Amino acid sequence: MKKAVFSGIFITALLTAGFVFLSINKMEGYKLLVFSVLLVALLSAFFTYMIAKINNIKSKNSKPQVEQTEDDFFKKDICGIEILKRELNSIMNNYRDGILIFDEKLNCIFINNSLKKFLGKDAKNIKYNEVFDDEKFEMLVLKASNGQKDSAKIEFNEKIYQCTSYLLDEKDNKFLSMISIRDISAQEESDSVRVEFSANVSHELKTPLTSIMGNAEIIEMGIAKEDDIRNIASNIRSEAERLLNLIDDVINISKLSDKEIKQSFEEVFIDEIAREVINTLKFSAGTKNIKLNLDSKNISLSGNRHVIYEMFYNLVDNAISYGRENGTVNVRIYADDKGKHFEVKDNGIGIAKEEQKRIFERFYRVDKSRSKSTGGTGLGLSIVKHGSLMHGAEISLESAEGKGTKIDICFKD
Image 1 (tube, rainbow, N blue to C red):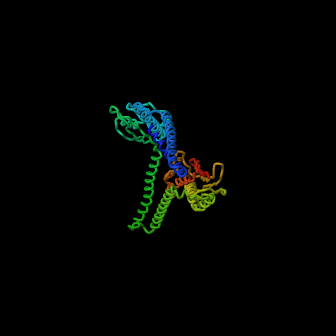
Image 2 (image 1 turned 90 degrees about the vertical axis):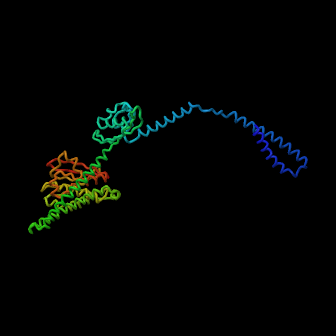
Image 3 (image 1 turned 120 degrees about the vertical axis):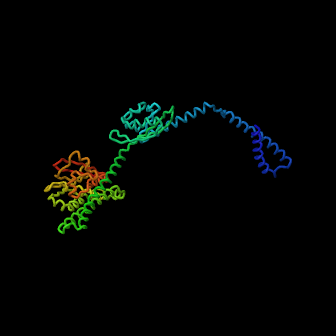
């Protein structure tokens, strides 16, 4: 209240001081003094009353501050824990890898959505040995319950998974544990292909080099007769040519994963490329008296011309290599509602059904003895496969032993 009175007096004094200053020359000295005193008193009383009333209203409207008890703090902590729990559940449920949590009795108390979809059921409250039918997984969970962190690879439904254990809490020398499960099938397949490719390249390079060195050594030691030198030189040349072809194919495959090639797409006319390929391979087909036929229309698409040429070349060359003497190789270019097609059909030795899934693998050969004699590297159809993937094209294969093979590449563009 004292603060209110003081504030009223101070404000009134300031206002009246201005008034007195303006009227100082119009009143006599004692009259002005009396008037000023009265005015200050009246205004001070008025403003003091108003300020006091306003403060009284505010104090009535304000709520009394209530002290918080220990129960209130406890309730806040519980609320914060519940929020944190929901956030953690949301994170784990949306995590890409599968997550399982087992209690000390090896019961599953949590399973995230990723693993639920994979298993096709809610595995909550089931035992550790009921999740996967795999001894390595069961051993991993048992070790985790005894405080031992570990990891293991398991195979399930034709896929490979990396399972890793984490320790969460301990109770009576038994641990609450979490197991993460990641699908590494693609990575394992990639690693396997890379190792196999390296081994095959080493073998394929070693074979012609060994032949070249052996022939060169015969000449160097003077063992070869003069009449045999021409044959030895011819053998060295053919092996060197085979070596160069292999190196070229390896380079071509490595380029197919190059981003610059993928970005260099342009409009290309596949009928022109097909005619160029057939003209290049006419001599090779003539050595086996194979007739090359082309049925084409003027069709263009967006792609990399060099890669498409390599794809077409390898398909036609493969048909000639595995075709019968005096046979035919028919090349057809057409379009339908599915896309734009490049089709190669021969009447050669054909491919057994069990081998058809593997012919696009690197270095895989249907007839190893024949491909060796024709100088094949085993990479031709792999180049076709990778080139098709680059262009978003699909490959279809129809073949039967002794009746020939038809391979069709369908470009979606």
